[in-house]
Length: 307
Image (cartoon, rainbow, N blue to C red; front, side, top):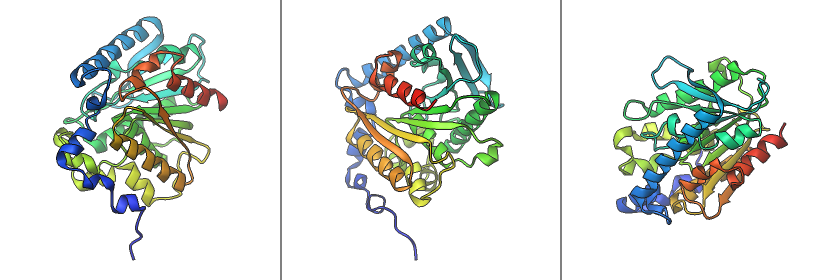
């Protein structure tokens, strides 16, 4: 007899939405209250480019370091002033619905984190249509393994992803690290404004470059996979998972975060759900350039309480 999952997975509420409503719910720029949708996207990209230029100009770094043979399989490494391999590493995965964005416009958090002695690794991966979702998940796993092998004395890898990057980070909760020949020293996950069940996206324009089938979507949905594999904790029970979203993320993004948090709790993970006030899907990452930002402070407190 088949074992039924949680009611939310058997009869998901998103199926009651019209195609137009789904398109609206899964278009984050339409929910920005401070700017129009196009201006919000343009501002986010411009701020990312500027933050990355500042980080490269003012921080010690090693740029475009290959973690694999593929053209996009490179990572930018930024270091604190004090030279040491025994540092915590904050590894960041950019968003862009798996079809836009890059590591070259994602270094928002470099200045405040390196000032506190944290190394930052920003990962590149093949976006659609060149990259498939299966490839992206594999690339991220290999980038994490690369950082662990390169810095075996690290004081913890803190994996953070935004939007599509949060999905890719969440997929690392399911990774069998023996296939990569290393057990990464994962201490915490920061999953920021993510999508964890991909099935609704099959019915939106976001799937045009991805070309996901239902099988692809289910295989790459951490919500579905973790619900079916309760007790699977390759990262270790001490690893924290912070599911984070902005007040002005759409209701569907709120639902996804809440249900994924509940799935983590049922699976025995040490998880928390954090809603940051007065920020939207883009501000939540833009503000990481500031040390006094709520999410920056959450990251620093999580890292240094564990050292």
